[in-house]
Image 1: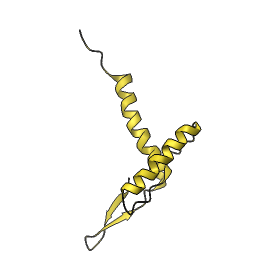
Image 2: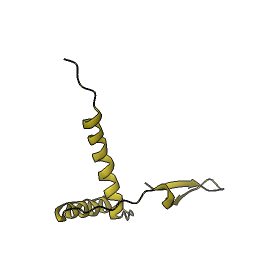
Image 3: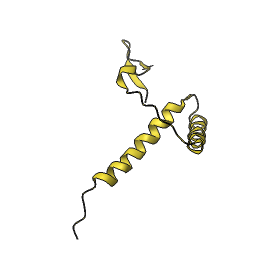
Length: 81
């Protein structure tokens, strides 16, 4: 996610997120997962002209989407029946 700052003359200027806004996590992944992430990165950059996303962007996207699913599975309230 690219943060946006509003300049004095009212124009939007993109800014890089401050590294203090993030926690660094290191993980080992299987080669197949790496290939899949690289494939997604290539597709994202091709589908968004001018975008030069990095692998970390794709990993954050995948983690966020997977985390939503995991939370729903682990914290879902049991259905009464």
